[in-house]
Length: 172
Image (cartoon, rainbow, N blue to C red; front, top):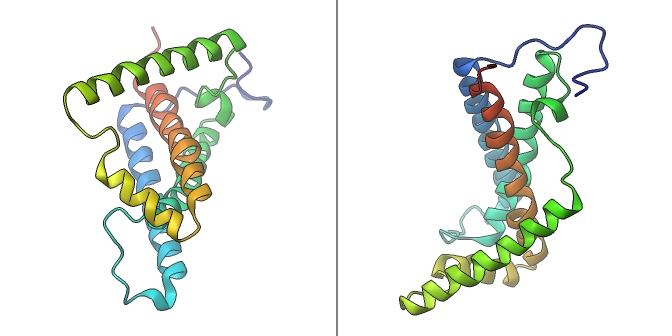
């Protein structure tokens, strides 16, 4: 594994307290930026009371906050002389792994949807319907789909499977 192109080898990953502190800082910075972006976007709509599950607000929040979160964690990795890709374990899966993951996801979706129907619960919860409808009404459906299908999962993977896992695992 090539950790860096620098002449100095990478330092040990951040320890547990520093990993948690960096992660909390990344979350805080991303929330501050998302709040500022939403406030600037809202402008003269300030008197409007958005619904709890406003699809536009969800979209703006994800699209503004996740890049900040990833940038902070990448910066923390660089401080330890690692490439962000290596520190965060960003590896392209093999085609067979991707196919297997997609098939497993489809199978789980079928099973869980069947369980929801059999148990008499809504297949799509009301909050999702409200978020989708509000985004659709505002012309933000593509943005919402991008935010919840791509951007938010990428942010979660980078934060938890990448940064947090690397900082919590002790070399054996």
